[in-house]
Image (tube, rainbow, N blue to C red; front, side, top):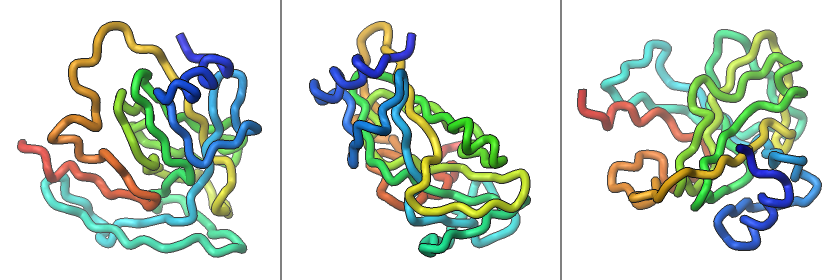
Length: 178
């Protein structure tokens, strides 16, 4: 079951969902539109190693936009900071974004109860497309949780992405033991 607009508003009032900045016009019938932040990043090296800390180079999107190219993997960030304390948030692309050939996440569309931060976007494109800071890029939907949460994400000692800032964050896979 997905929360409706009225339920999302109730949860915002209760403080179990937080969205900053919040704009009422961005609330759909069962989702909330999020926007592309002003910072993008690419990995410094062409070959990535899952056991290594792969570093990124960040840059701001100019006011007149930035062209994304196929075969280049970009990390972006949502303009919105969110907190979700009683529901499972899912980040999905918007149909208008998809129709431009923009994918906003490779595999990480689900958040955890207790996620607090800006969302890092895993952006790839099918053909060159110009993007702009502040453009609608995706939508958050919220699912209720069945049962008690023992430890929320922001309370885990090994939560690698808790408190993400308003800039893209690279993979922290290297912190895992394997």
